[in-house]
Length: 262
Length: 262
DNA sequence: CGGCACGTTGAAGTGACTCAATTCGCGTGG
DNA sequence: CCACGCGAATTGAGTCACTTCAACGTGCCG
Image 1 (cartoon, rainbow over the protein chains, first blue to last red):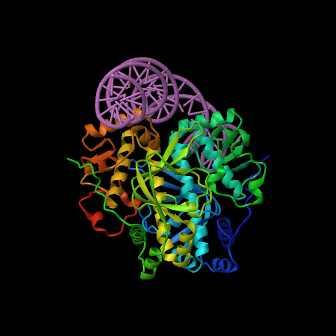
Image 2 (cartoon, helix red, strand yellow):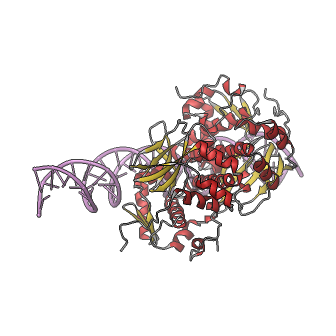
Image 3 (spheres, each protein chain N blue to C red):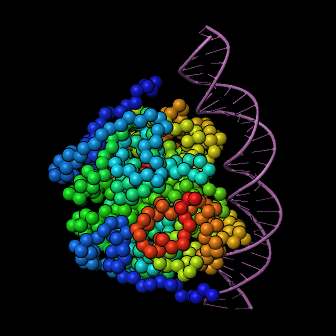
């Protein structure tokens, strides 16, 4: 039923940057032309490859073009704690623009394509067009909101709900980025990685997946997340996407989702 | 031995804002005069009082002058998940400047004094002086780094180490803000609140506190945190303050701390 | 003196982890 | 076509850490 090919409309770098600017502000014509002047280079990554590592001082920022990236902390034991996952249009490390030393690493979770934007270019853009800077500032603030949710998720919910909430978030964001294919989207994480993100063992992840499958709300199989019953899934964890701050009136956000509290 | 009075050097609003600007950039004379023009009003809060709540759309930003504030999520069960704690000089909700709806609440944990800075004033400041905006952007990015640490802390560490790491962070930040009195600082949280921050029951918090006390590394009693053995405490949890990004060469950061990895 | 919030302790129950074994899916090579 | 190897998923059993519940202590304030 589901086709192999991902329903991914190819999008250019300026297009993605403009979409971001539009998400958190109203770009003017001058803003747009400034954005279009940004120079960059692209790079293809293999699954598992690191882009930047804890302790480094990068001089470029990353924009995801395709695939999924993940941020993680490395623990003294060598274990990983995944902090967030990033899809097309995300800029997972703008913070390196203003905080010199990276406190975490960034890796590709499957084959991915990224654009590298030199810090100098971005800084100049934001100095010349502060309004554009505000938009990207807003982007980093959404990021922070996602981190806050992760704290709550990993600290205050039981195992099944943790997984369910992560599924809600990943699917909702994928949908917003037009990366879904009906009720399914790509989630190229194995059960161990999910455990390292949610603070649980891969065994517990396995049992949580089975629970959600038995309850007929969601299904994860070979890198593909399939939502079986969105209302039931969101109700279960009281998923409220306000924190993702997608309040733009995109036609997508107004389709038959039943997200808001009763 | 410890005096009742907190060793709090009174600091003015412009002074605190300038210190922030200096922390994450090099303020010019024009920056300074623009910052000094900011108008604000102050407010005194009683312990437990909410400043802003989940779902609101505030039009002012908060600067902490004294006392401690906390951010928290409210769960469907009514329980709280504390997300972060804030002391003098922090601006816990600049994000409301660029994200309209608040996804969490902010409350005073003890008696506190805050300054309220109208969004319009800040926006104008950042538009006119983008360099200053960069500095405050950096401030929100440090915030995000602290959230990331909280994810790792609450997801990947055992109970005793969770508490120990939080103590390290709170003391280090208090020290940086010149709010410590020798080896102790104010931490106006009871054991239940610590539990709601660290994702553990107040019983576990109690036993973790006793463990740290018995091991002679730290002591929490009636709202006061006392560090008994800083090297042992930081070594225990591998505390690396890089993520707080206090790389300014303040004389404070260069005193006999032994923080960096061997 | 009484009430109350906070801290402390013990005991019982359970949820989650570790460890180990088995199965499945899939690509490779014989 | 089948054997093989390998990583991932699944299952079970034993152990331990943490939670829950209940009781008691202690200090503070009315």
